[in-house]
Amino acid sequence: MVSNISKRKLFEILFKGLPIGCFLVDKNLKIIAFNESAEELTGWKEKEALGRPCREVLKSSLCDKFCPLEESARLKRSFIARDATITSRFGEEIPICFSSSTVFDDEGHVEAGIEIFRDVGANKRLQTLRNRIISVFAHDIKTPIAVTGGLAKRLLDEKVGPLNEKQREYLKLILKESTGIENLVNELLELLHIESGRISKEQTTVNLSVFIKEIVDEIAPKAREKGIKIREDAETDLLPIYLDKIQIKRVLINLLDNAIKYSDPGKEIELSAHKKDGWLILEVKDQGIGIPEDDLPHVFEYFYRGKNSKKVADGTGIGLASSRAIVETNGGRIWVKSKEGQGTTFFIRLPFSPDP
Image (cartoon, rainbow, N blue to C red):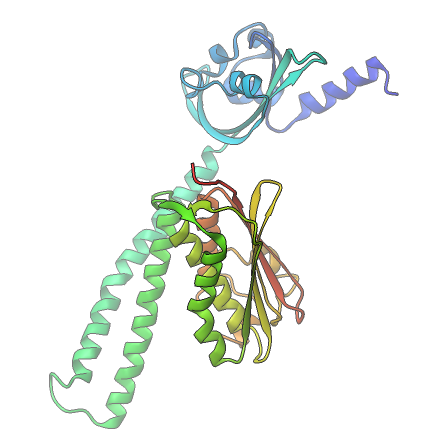
């Protein structure tokens, strides 16, 4: 057993030394502990914050319409990684990411509440700057590429005179490459559109068994060309689910297309769906070349392509980044498990939301 004095010391070490803001409130939402990181972020000293209502210290953008600690007490649940804005003692508005929870006694009465929060302003500024640079670059390069492709096509159509075979060969190559760059720019702009949150979610009721079969039927001709079989496996007792059919289908088609690219003829790919702990789990499993261990942490990054993938098929390195953005926009997560030479499995976790 840890003595009471040891517990207090342990609390002080952990609470005071946290590199993110943290405070505790009593059942009346008055601050009873306030760590050093919270002091630095808000401008309030602990001795000044103690005893004050947390709304008076934080001046959160949520205080007047939705108090996470009050809701946590009412619903008996935690709020994890939510975004908000607080106003420091000096009037600075600070974007934060916070998590909050309530502690109950043995009889179910509220004893205290805890909230941790961190400044995400620097990350948001970097993200905005990155997106702005990429967007400007993409838009600036899109027009000259389109013009180049258009001129090459006019020459191929012999609008300005006949061509010999060598000239025709070179122009076809120019047109192919310019079209490829134009497609890349369009994919990049679309990815920025998705990541910015401007993508519209069109959720509809989906019968999962039918949904999985439709996807397999659509990609099957490409698989047959390579002698690859796609097997579907959706739990038969799954209820219809409410999700963005168009965007999730796009993600699964992309994963299946990659599985086909990086699998040898005669291999098998499996698309499965099942429910686990209140979540829908989708899996795309192949018997392909696999992903080297060093590449695994980077597969969802912009333009990243594994060392062995470049030897097998062409690609832009945007497809998986787009898939990640779409899944996260729909409240889910995507991850991968793989061993080089032993195949790859992509997992998607989505909220299992029956039709309301």
